[in-house]
Image (cartoon, rainbow, N blue to C red; front, side):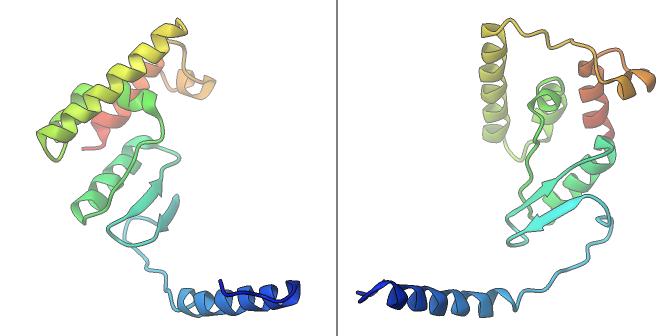
Amino acid sequence: MKSHVGFQSMVEDILQIAERHLQKLNQRQRENLPGFRTGRWYAVRWQRCVFWCNGKPGGWLWRLNLLVRCGATVMFSEVTEVRDAIHLLTPRAVNEEVGKRLLEEMEWYDNYLNMGKTDRSANPSPGNKKGGLANVVEKALGSIAKSG
């Protein structure tokens, strides 16, 4: 920012800068993507996006695979689901380096859980129990396996 004489001068300069940014931002347009009518979708650019999954993981993970095929970057927000299905995910990694990196992260996570003596086979939520799941490991395996 340039030198300012007084507070008002600084505020006016900030507002001018903000106006320039808003003019550019207001030119953005949303795109409707097939298969993405529900959930939350945030995209800065098509190649760099974050897809926030909620609801039925199997269906969402299928959509994540579709996004990846289109060049998007996705992330899992629940490490437990990745951890308990890592053997299903590593063969699907884009290359060997990414697969190894996943394994390294899961090793770190296992060590972290072991420090706190955490039981990974703990019971799932009441809704998952009602659906027939015995533990969170089954939930993870099911959601990753159904993702295709």
